[in-house]
Length: 168
Image (cartoon, rainbow, N blue to C red):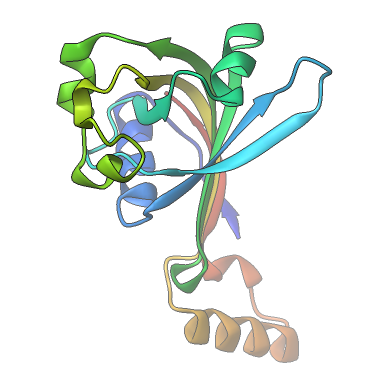
């Protein structure tokens, strides 16, 4: 894979492209004892603009962990398209009802019987500052064929896609 780095508006667009069709992200927080804890979160239904929003319960362990250490990692994987990205940033807990209303999704009702006015509903806001990505830009079959040809012929293996760092 060729290394290609992005920053600013171009970086935001690259992240937007990589996560737009991925429905579940893994949110990793730091527990009080320093252990890393990851759990699946529904991907926000809006284009990435530098900030991610996740609906959560205010009384969850992840909110406690974010209050203790706001550094988080949010990772996405779409193996069939060869797209992977890990986003680093700072998280905060948001209780503002207008914000909860803005980011509410019908699927969240399963966790909050009272809907968006449920007092247990809160948001995790992740301000992303950097990312690392791997993007094969091709289907699995095409990638495997290119790698097989490269291993037999000694051709350039970087033609299967690109990877790099993104600064938001």
